[in-house]
Length: 481
Image (cartoon, rainbow, N blue to C red):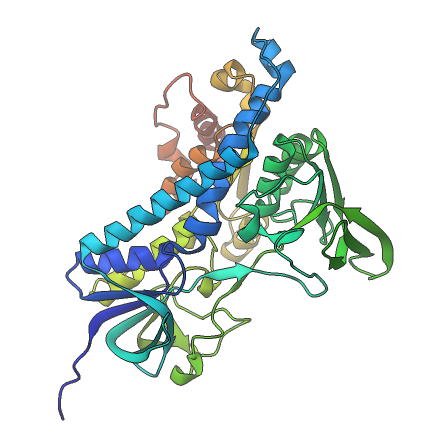
């Protein structure tokens, strides 16, 4: 029997952060690699997600700071009225996207990765179909295949998208115009970040949340303080338990609101624009997964912690999936980590991903971050493993650096085991929360205890002392038996 000749050692379908890291890592380890991308290199994160949205948040955040007359007056500073140019703010985001996309492409080329433009699909075991942009179709053979096709914004039934007056985050990052009154459907991290941008730039915002509380995915203790600052103190009308059952684009946009549980009609709103921020769905339907007998769960591809694709609960040889399409933590850095894990296993190093140690952040002003277990998850674990859960809260109002910045409204909540002191999770709201969470994420990755963490010296005066205080408070609660 003749030996199979492969075109590539590895073909990656999708060039977002997960696919990029997988391809780069594999090429650096000597594999012959190709990556297939039908759109722009960089996927959602670079082109329509974290990169442009953070550029908008950075610019609008400056506007918010300069426009906060009372905050500046407390420093003894008196600034002139703030002026900004919407187009130049949008250009800042677009230029950043172009730069990072170019850098990413050059990095892959320098690593020796073959970039194939077109639509990729599976054509059986170790076979990948490629329809090039000019219509030419071919089938390539690869020893291993990684699926990294990402996700798209979810648009609920009854909502019509026109890309101008009713749009998703894909279009919002372009900041083509500033509606006088915009409704945002959903109060997760995407909805909150864009509410931050729009209010800073002078728009009136209505948040529509179908679940029974605004910010339903965030820790409830943090939500109380975050809602007070991010919603209640701004020009935002937040409605929970309300369903946007129908949205019709136009001028004005008409929104039919219903009771989320009873589905009874409440009222009709007329606004200038609507941003639909109701989550994301996997991009998997055109992958021809049936050719390898893979069944999805609501479109998500099942994988194990080695990133092997599962068929009937068992790993399938030579087929891997990473990123949003797997339905795990739908974050760019999660996808990148999954890509590296997949390649490590391909080259023979057995490695599993540790989702508990992967942090998440919402880049509002101030920020929100979290890592590890939620309080509910930690309570459940304590019942299963029979230990007492410890919870401490460390406040920014006791932190010298936060007081110096006049930004002392913040909270850190730490979850830990009282028997061993192991850190299980943390949730932070406050100045630079997205940076502070990394220290706790590293501790969780190492499964460290507050017994050792409480002895670590933190720079004074810095915000990191909020974490230090939490560790020391936790130490006092440990079982002495």
